[in-house]
Image (cartoon, rainbow, N blue to C red; front, side, top):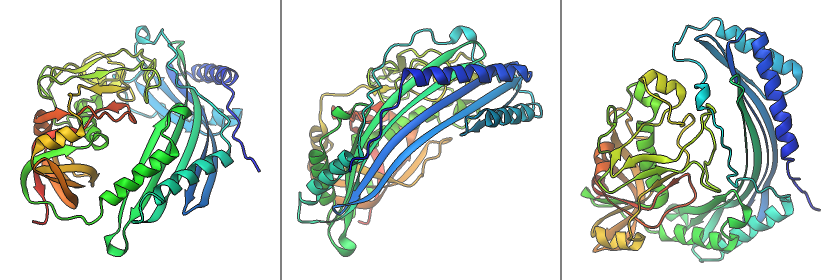
Length: 451
């Protein structure tokens, strides 16, 4: 039996969503709204999970939705629905308009300036639909899990291999007359394995994600990596306690960059809830390090021609030679701060950090004695003060070599100091995220272990 997810029609569906968006905007005007904006989306997907050589779940998804924001001068409200029939949409619009009339005036509310609407819509190569059938997905999941379980006799259990495919399209439109389309596909493969027995068991895994199915890592290769990572964590020992260099592997290091992005985002700044208040034009990273945004990168994880306000996106430096060049602002946060939008309503797009020549092995050799962090636990980050304290697991390094695995350690510092004390960024860039960074070596942090 073959179960296939047929590919979603593209241009006709986008045209239909665009027509509906225009009808909704006309309806808001008829209800007296001075401005309005609407988002429409249609998504389809298939996911399969296989565990211990058997199919555990097969799930087809199909979603669609509408969200609308109306403005009556400075009064605003939003409402949404997953039902796109005429009666449901009308009820949603009535609800939004009724709420807006009872909200307080906000002089910063309203659409972004009409002159800032996107006018260029390059093909970002994000749309690669295919009729992925369940049988093929099951086969990939089984092959991946088998490759992992057979890699090492110490692999004792599996939390499952997952194969997922999704495709979606969306339309954003507003009463400036702007209509913007977006569409994309997503393919992912992941595996989590357990090594050891009883209280000595350790878990780890690996994953890959891409907008083009042919660019994914092979299931055999991914399975082997997941197994090697799980086995490497067996027989952990406590880390020493003291001040040591800490090396964040690439997939964990991007959380440090994410903390910086949150701190320079408009919402945190106008609420004065950021450890980087008033840092425009000041160092936030060591000299020589840049953070560059590339919103139009082909096949980028967060490529877009326009932001959530319809404002055209432009590539530029966020940090140049360690110095903060701008904030991340949408139209609302920009007005609150008395500034101009940077085209970042909804967040940053694709961001690259300057990397060095040293790969991961060279960074380990150079750190001498310290902790390699491969996993972070807990939420011990204060966004206002930058105080940082999180559980960590990874490997202890002695004499420039990995000596043994570590779990249940705690690392602590202050994010402002940590970012400024970055000593190196590795060449081992993780391409599976919109934040592209290699491993990051922080010069000194407090490590609390059991010794």
